[in-house]
Length: 155
Image 1 (cartoon, rainbow, N blue to C red):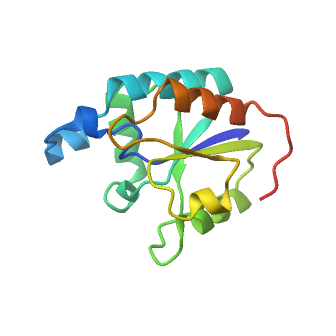
Image 2 (cartoon, helix red, strand yellow; image 1 turned 45 degrees about the vertical axis):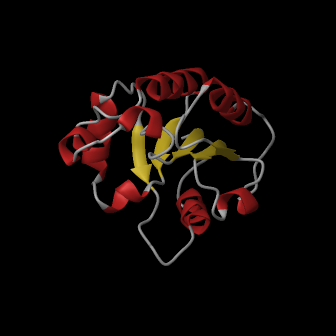
């Protein structure tokens, strides 16, 4: 694995602008994912060769197979390869680092609508989206620049 997108779901591809009053069935089948956000995610994956690792709390509710199905049903054409460890007592930044220690990563970006500790721990790798708008051209372009940077990363 070379490039990795650590991806939140709510506020990135499941946006306040598009999801509206989503019921559990529409969430399970991916039909409430924002098509424009999925478009930008598809472009990002296609142009950088990145795989997706889920960081969202949705990993507490859905297993990897279900998450893959949701993304596929929403039109995502890339690979959802994993999710970070499920350890609610540990900050997500530590779970991301834990995941990177056991997997080969050349470049990575973290896309999320909530900064919590991510912006402090990964200031040059964190892209913050808006819950209402999700992944946009601007956040896609910022993410792409990070993933295509040839600077060696330190974990």
